[in-house]
Image (cartoon, rainbow, N blue to C red; front, side):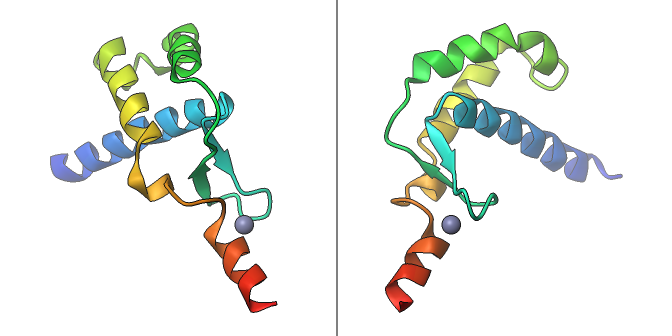
Length: 98
Ligand SMILES: [Zn+2]
């Protein structure tokens, strides 16, 4: 595996951890019908995400350089424009069609 590819995979697994923590504290939400769809819930507290991340630090210390890198990524993902949809776009499209 090339080091570039490995780097991309590492970044992706870090992102998944951050998104997972944000889902757990309710800042991000999964569509109940489309689990691949993630969107901002408009609720939840970023401080709760940081606390949870610190509680679980031992699980994730292998992939992050330090806690700061993890909390920075949590903040970045909580503001990720990809999740700025108002609910699930697939469900919304289906509703518009009806
Ligand atoms: Zn949906």
